[in-house]
Image 1 (tube, rainbow, N blue to C red):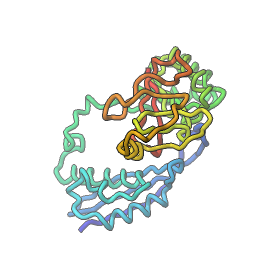
Image 2: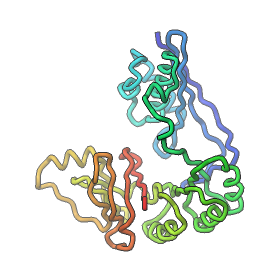
Image 3: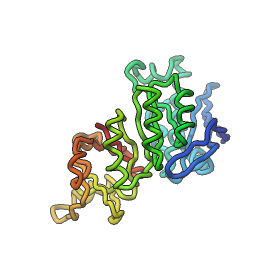
Image 4: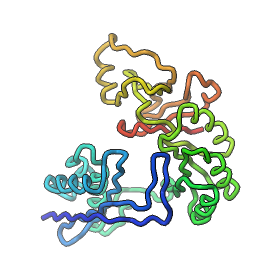
Length: 294
């Protein structure tokens, strides 16, 4: 018999975590435990209000998923099969717990169970929230043991903050604007971000300004007009025949270059100087984030 337990708890943050869209001193998360045959697997949900989730909605989703779980050994697909729409944090927690349980059942670490070579895994970045250059300097010192830094941006202090980071370290740096830049902000910042050796920019533009057309192209509308189309809808409309048509927008990323959804270089038609950048949409149409790589 499967037993599932969950509890939420509050994490007290060492520093105020500040983004372009708000700040917080605490984070409420949900711990999930799945017990079967005397073994306990554990997972964690870290829901984000920006995407319509919180600890309460995650708890409700976990309870619904628990009533649908049958064989915990089918960890590869079980969480996806019982997932509640719009609650990916809960799904992730169940998925983690099932995989943890499987590793304990077989007496092997999870990476071995999944056939993963740890030496080939991407290095996790340490996130530095928005703050004054003086406090950012302190945070960089605290992150001494991390090989990659991710710096939150979205204020008038962006350049000073990055100059502070770069004056202290030559480690790889990534930037996350959390949709906090305007079209003009992005154009102005991309040049000096590249000059300072930034590896990539995450979520530079508001998600509601992005859309996918019937060909799977990504478009950005500076005025925010136009409906956003997720990939499923775009595929459906593409199948509807040659009559389907859309106006050509002023900002276009080139067509999918691979099944992974990678878009390669044209960021903006009206900004020819940045054609060397590459857009990489994430898989979730809800988030509609893009990464800009050089």
